[in-house]
Every structure is written in structure tokens, then in C-alpha cells.
Image (cartoon, rainbow, N blue to C red; front, side):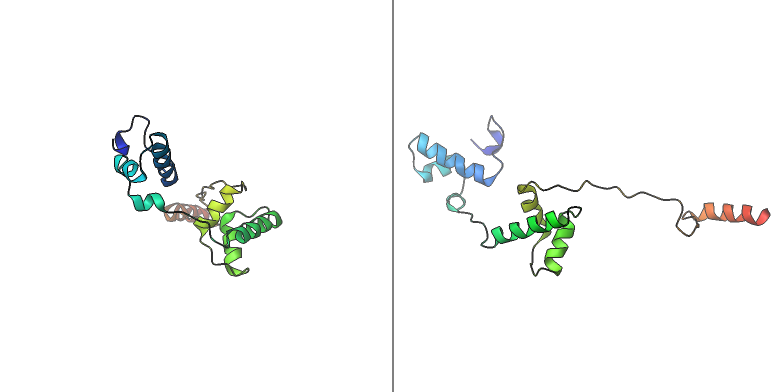
Amino acid sequence: MPFSKRPHGKLLSPSRRRKMVLKMSQKLAVSERRACKVLERARATQRRNLSPSSDEKQLTDDIIALATRYRRYGYPRITALLNNKYGWRVNYKRLERIWRKEGLKMPKKQHKRSRLWLNDGSCTDSGRSIRIMSRATIS
């Protein structure tokens, strides 16, 4: 039965799919090849072993150290610090994954405010500023 027509929904993650093939082959006492064929899985993906990078532990320690030192910084700013000052070449998506795994705080999405007035007192809407200027010249 294809994954899309399974009664319990899809097995989404590749690791869960690998576990399902192992469970099926052990429980029903069939070979891995037969289990992969029934579940429509490639045997090459079944045998793939994912191992974390060798520098993952050191990177995690550095992230935690920077997060405790700069408590108000989020993962984008910590990524910039690691890339620019500490000599790491790390992708922000990898850092975000580690950040979530370690349970560090995630910054909330801040919506940009649309302002009508600028700091120098001028108005951003050109039609409105003309009206304001004309009133000022009349008085």
C-alpha cells in the first residue's frame, strides 16, 4: 500500500520510515529487501546512516556560551557573531536547528510599523505633506 493511502496518514520523516521498515522486517520475519519493496522504499535510503558533524558538539558549546553571554541576542545575531568574530562558517538554518534542539529562546516575529511621520518632522505621504505645508503658509 503506498504511503499516501495508509490508514494512519503519512510516515513523514525519513528516520520514521527507516524505523518502520526495520519494525516490519523484524515483526513479520521478512528480509529487508522484501520490506522495502512492500513499503515502496529504496534500499539505499534504508541503509543510509546519518552521523552528526564532528564539530557539532563544539559548535553547540559555543552557541550556548554566546547565548548566555548575550542574552538578548537571537539566533540570527549569534550566527553573525560566529561567522564574523569566532571563525565559524555556519549556516543560519543549521544554527537555528541547534538553537531549537537546545531549548534556547526563540525571538518573536516583530512586525514593521508603518509610520506617517519621520524624525525630522516631515511627512512620508507626499499629498498630505503638501496640504500641511499649504496650511502653514496660509497662517
